[in-house]
Length: 378
Image 1 (cartoon, rainbow, N blue to C red):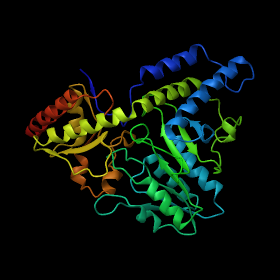
Image 2 (image 1 turned 90 degrees about the horizontal axis):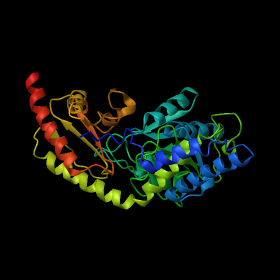
Image 3 (image 1 turned 60 degrees about the vertical axis):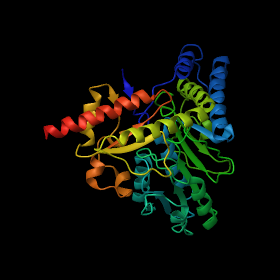
Image 4 (image 1 turned 120 degrees about the vertical axis):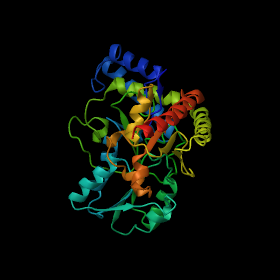
């Protein structure tokens, strides 16, 4: 039996998404920009998917733009907003635990002359709205803070941050990378203070290669891509209709099961924490303000990559930090004050609606077994 517990890295496409993609590839294969019937029906599929996303995010469909994924959406948000507002200021704030697609975009902007401030967590590892607001001044044009951290599940108070930074400077734009929160936690954009929000398809049981950026009505960003002027000129390029249709189908299903899935993840997280207590080598910190679908733990004395490959031989798949980091030292754990040895021993377990308690039981048993046998080999 395969036990896939790396759903924060990517998910298996659900049947509804696969069916929608195949239908679009075989039956509705027109270019959405074409003026004939094939083009109109392809465009209709895109608009139906856009409406599904809008319903899940409580925003207007016209405020959503499809991208190739969250990396592009994050780059569009940061670089596009900075370029559109460069005459207003040059300071940008980001949390110290952002995804590399935000941090690298910020690094690019820093090389262009912008001033980047990384906001650290408090000593208890929690981010507060005040820590962002106090760094805002008249030169600040953009603040970016992720909704749920992709490595630890830490929840950042994005609505509070947005409101506090705008109270300090009403002209500041607020962006959030909501990839790990979308369809895992309720998101209501209306009245939230959020101006820009990024989501990804392959984190919510749609295929890889599609995502979306929410741009609040009235907010302007400079485009990164120039071409045929699709999507109002904000994101040129022929829309990948099969991927967009699949994304819409996955979102519809996820929205319908949101409450059910949230309760399921909470039960699994509690069960894992309880079972982990029986294994002395497993270390878990207290998890206040953490999303339950992501659990971070360390196995004393065993490097995470060693344990990862040990589990793999039994068909159990977990992650050592973020899949996007490819084994590099975690900047997230470092920012949260985790010592280097513990960080090197940390695993990330992330659930799906199909994860069962029996899978968690097998995981804990194999970790305990691996901790004993791998320690004996040293």
